[in-house]
Length: 238
Image (cartoon, rainbow, N blue to C red; front, side):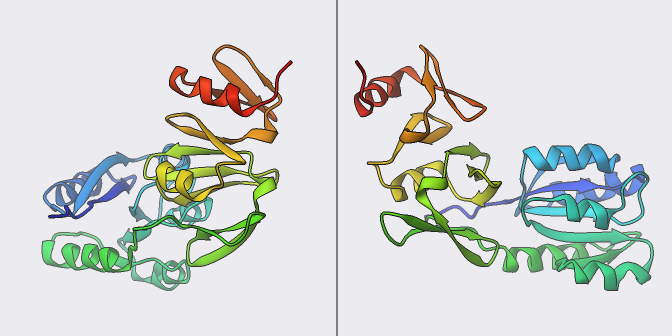
């Protein structure tokens, strides 16, 4: 029997009481996995750039950065439930394609659960690799609801990133919902190689190799001992 994946979530609100209320509602909801709470939206933004999550509960009016400004900083698209004491922000919020809008005080668990159920219904985890191999020269990356074409020669490396992977090209660092294993199974093994439990690299992008690391552009990537032999067999040395 398969176990339903919980939605990882973060709560951001500068009001300590609201933060505690939402956090307690999250923790009593079996379909949610609480990952952290923040009163400082800037601190939350920095965390979310490093730790993508499935669901974000966020206030609108906060010092230094509003909730809507925080949403704009995200390089990935979680489900978003806005929490506010004012109705007038609702239109702006829904223009950001938020999942639901809760008015403070959030005292009704049934209404909270309704918002969570909407997020679950809209959240579509990848059951297969989001990479579709179209030829030996390019792939399609599923980013949000779009399949975007990328040349294989432009991919430098792929890094495990929680429930996501990060894919580096010369133009951008992309965050894609996938496992490193699914990506490894999709990319052609004649061009890409797993060198660490957290990294896949494009072999012809390697600039130099030492005992424990390799370099691609300005990125230093660790080499696990278990993968080193296969790496050395894949390159030509004198």
